[in-house]
Length: 446
Ligand code: FCB
Image 1 (cartoon, helix red, strand yellow):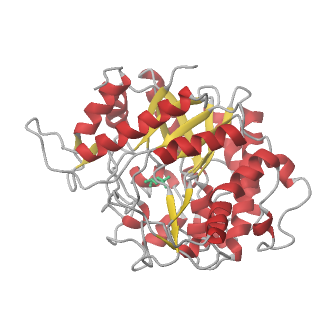
Image 2 (cartoon, rainbow, N blue to C red):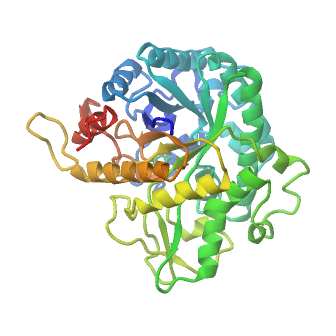
Image 3 (cartoon, helix red, strand yellow):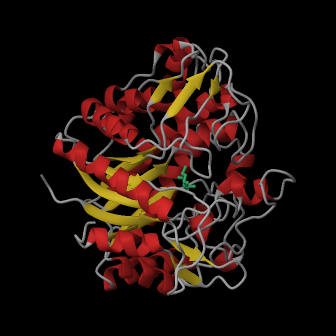
């Protein structure tokens, strides 16, 4: 069995700030944040962690952990302000320096091409429900790969396309904030098509590239009064839609009936099937399906994100994180087994795992105390080792996240970081979990 690599992750809109710099265009999150009530604390990504300007300081923090890799994302509107045409020099230069900064510190760059910041101009031209957006994505991917492909081999196309499609175009709680239903299935198909076209473009520009996609899969469990048919529907949208397309070139039949009949064109699914060199898994929590639960359970656990489902609710069981997400590391073992079963032989990267908890004050040395987070990481790292011992080819474990940042619709209220970013000063203050994870990756296990 290959040794397990370790890393930490961030995403462009959540950390960068400097939104008007270098000709960057507006994105769908800039627009959503401007909508009253869309973000819990009324905030946005305009300052975030100021990482665009503090790249070196942040890369030193990554290196200080002793991990081997940094997963970050590239902001499409920094490369093409309106999502089309030639690349902006300042944008490419920024990520070029970021990659060089990683290599200089002995770290591997693990970029994700799309972590939700769609250029607003493309949303106005139809967004992900429009097929043309997939073609635009492939052009953008080619520009980035042509510049970075001599130094980057591990590429991810999309982060959690389920969120883009179903939180973005059905529940409407994530950008672009469209409430509806049918458009979400069109978005999902075009995101998968864009992944396939983008992967082809990356490989054409960078022949050594290893291209993956990052999925947020989760076991869908049934509460005592839950309806198995609702469970099956949620599982179809959350998990099987993506896995069936990528592994077998098909969609779950209960979903095809809900989508626009002209959506899937001849040849599309052939391109999606077998398009992966590796698969990324973001795991936080299992889902639990009940009949009568609270109208809104954990963050993002929204029944409107599952169009066509029989009546159901989410009923997470304690212990819960600050997001209201059930803590259960056995779910991670379960999903890893599913991946090994569905995509046999494909290397798996846990590309995100971590937890938001309210931090518990300072230790004597000034660092932040966060025992809950340490416990969560310890249990989930043990789950990864369990899956590996059963033969699941997990090659990397990447923690979410390097530092507290803009947590989407929750603004700055929910903190997942190994490092605190002090509000106002933006001073980086490592938490106890930063020290703990650093010791763990160096092999000092308690
Ligand atoms: C995932 C996102 C990531 C972060 C975590 C908490 O859904 O990919 O950006 O917000 O959740």
